[in-house]
Image (cartoon, rainbow, N blue to C red; front, top):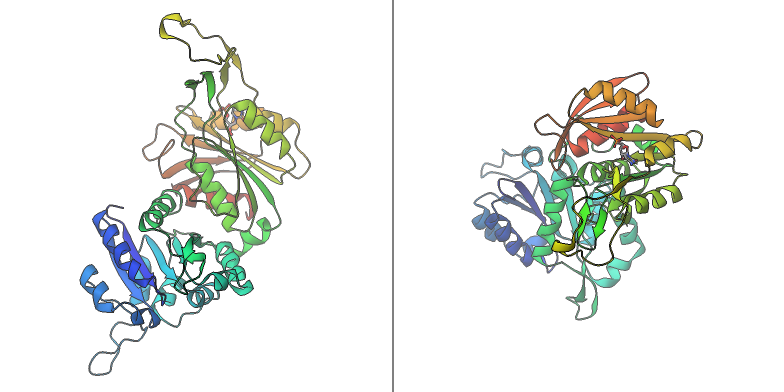
Length: 413
Ligand code: C5P
């Protein structure tokens, strides 16, 4: 969290006092925090508490008035929305959730959310029956559709004295989720809109299969052949496709944590290439397939069921070739299907990508330049060449923005 700009929005629920601890903990982890609250929240915690902790104004109304009655700060919501790397609404009442989802801008909090370019994490916190109410379910689904991140509330004792779902999760859980979101999502919305209506129209009835992360080919139960892929690019592709309304299935390496991704994305884990191949085949009827997984080209001929003792090990490992999944998809594609492959190269990027596209029968190859700073394995940013049959384009930025740009270029040319 070091150096991150966080805006916390506090709404009027009993858990508002926990936001005080959230502010403190974020500050301890190096973040710069500002707080905006709703009028109702001030019934639970005084604005002065947050002002003292953050050493900053705690805006409530859009038109704050100075003593002479003239508003001086009426564009503050825009400045805060620009300033923030992330907004967290904790606690978020059913009322504030409804307002956010429907684009209300009747307080500094809702207006700042509307103007935000950064990821927004909503922590719904309310009575269990209110959480289950059809209108709240509708608003939660809608919030997710609109690209907001949601943290599921905890089960336990509620302010009513009854037990149920609706408690604000522990501070650690909120911060963990924030860290995960910041790893995957864009730090700032860049040149592209958060949600593009046109791309949404194209993707909203599409099934997309995305694969991500490294395969592992086990020599014995504790040793394997693999690669440094972190799955970030594939997760960003899945997040961008889901944010634009696609029905996304993500096949991810079991070494990759996907908890930062929206619950609407179906997530299935794989270990080996064979395992991945089997799962890809069972989703081979998808409208779009994005093969971001870093697949191991070889696997050991033999996998020992017990750990091989150091002194008994054969120092030569016999390998065999793994199936080329993308090539198989290229040979078995159904009509109208769009196949997108990835390539990592250290030299002759363009030439290799062009050849790979034809050799594998893919429509598009996204080529990563491994030699370039801020690009490739583990980075949150990427620099890629998108190679199609008639176009070659360069994109760079956060992996999320690169993903959105790729989807725009392919589907809304
Ligand atoms: O041949 P190369 O590994 O460079 O190709 C990379 C692309 O092919 C990626 O999209 C990757 O997911 C896919 N691939 C595959 N099966 C393999 C190797 C790579 O589907 N065995």
